[in-house]
Length: 267
Image (spheres, helix red, strand yellow):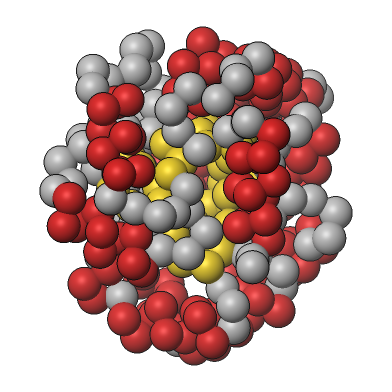
């Protein structure tokens, strides 16, 4: 059983959904990234997603695109991220790396998966790698006990959900909307129905991402999902707080408010 599996199993026994926080590695610096990870871990984040900056992040909205561009301007490399995760391993919750397939392919899938595990990364999300084409990657990842998390969408039919579930380890990432990441004022209509349809066709925990930014949204989704993923809301605080000495604490306050809201749900 992986560390990610253990998190979901333990939280299910407590009747609580997992809180997953996304931080773009290197935005605005690796030092701040490390401080952010430690802070959101302190504020009861159950799993932490590290974003690998990429020049063409097709699943990301404007906020995360700008975060990625700032990190790239800082010269952040894959090796820098591996060194960061090595420092964080053992002192924070499970780490999931979010990347696109081009850097994995250039690095070499076999070596990439090996270096992920050696640096303490527990799972990988590759949004532009569909399960139909992921066989060679999944094989390499499983050889080193590295979880791969695939995505479902509101438009995913039952057959595809079952395929995603078959290839996913750790959890299934359900994209709440058709489109890119970004904070939204309201939850999409039919989200609960869509998540329940995924759960009916999957034996993996289901975490919902894209658009979650407020305690009210987190509390609502916690009623029917196994986890929530918050990324753009964190990146927006970072963007507004660049150069401010209280940047890390501001993100911590957001995570604390989300965690407290989710803790009040009996699911």
